[in-house]
Image (tube, rainbow, N blue to C red; front, side, top):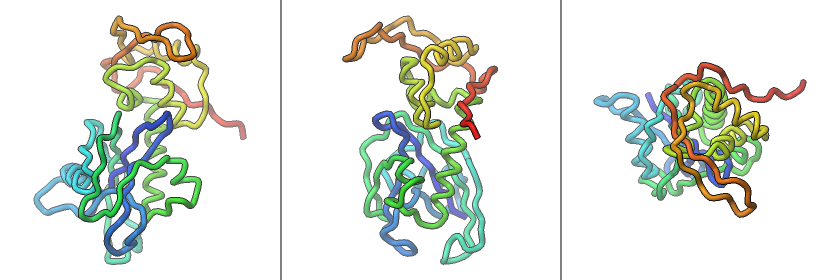
Length: 226
């Protein structure tokens, strides 16, 4: 039994995933998700937190949840291995440090992993990344997960960037603002503002996460025309 961790964060308004370059066979020199075998005396979540810290130096965020199980018989050339995937959302990733089982560790744009050949992943980790990203895209519609990317305080513009980065589409600022502020428990005003950006405009109102984990009214992602 193993665990693999999909760590997602925003860097320069783009969705990134945390990858390691494997030091050992199988797939030595290939990029992969951080993870490894579960010890007999630990839970799955404890194993996920331990492996993430050992291989990257990163402590898992408060938001850590299972997002899939993978057990194709030939997914690992060494033996029959079932892996439990975890999704971690981080507002900010601290300094990275490659552990004993990794030669490099890096934050990589999700688009480069899923749409190019620059980062071929070991095992079935590309599928796990795909599933983790889709989990986030769906949860953004139904839950307040977006605040985990930007909290503890943020502007609605910063919050909108989470949706646009994950969904790969621009949202109308006015409609987004009305939707968020009309959804009970989504965000709460702090009463403070931030100065306008370099392009001018009004000061940005600052908000904090509300009390709702599940949104009473979904924030629907735009559907592409067939």
